[in-house]
Length: 136
Image 1 (cartoon, rainbow, N blue to C red):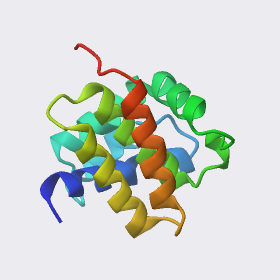
Image 2: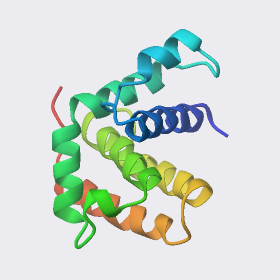
Image 3: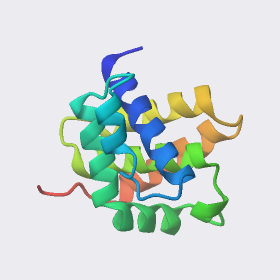
Image 4: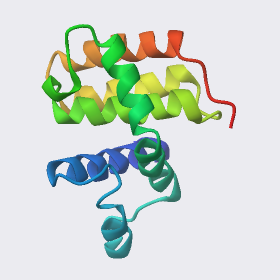
């Protein structure tokens, strides 16, 4: 598994844990950094913090383009994978859209339902096509 793939997976773990505990997206990040087992890489931190800071924008894009699948009906793994990938698509200049999409699809294949990879791919492809990158 490539390094950034591991960092994305760790970000997914943190986002998923925060959501399952009813906390903000970055609600368990400080705890994970303190424990550092498994280690939390700076890229993981930037993903979690970026998703948290841009949650309204990210969720609005996902809701707008997910056609008949509100966020609360999506599997939690898919929802958080999508959030990470949308953050990368919009705000991480050194990650091409195709890479962000491919990584999310790979993790969906590994961690979610049989239908998830196709759903994740389609939704992220749409978002990448219609949502321009931020100029940060």
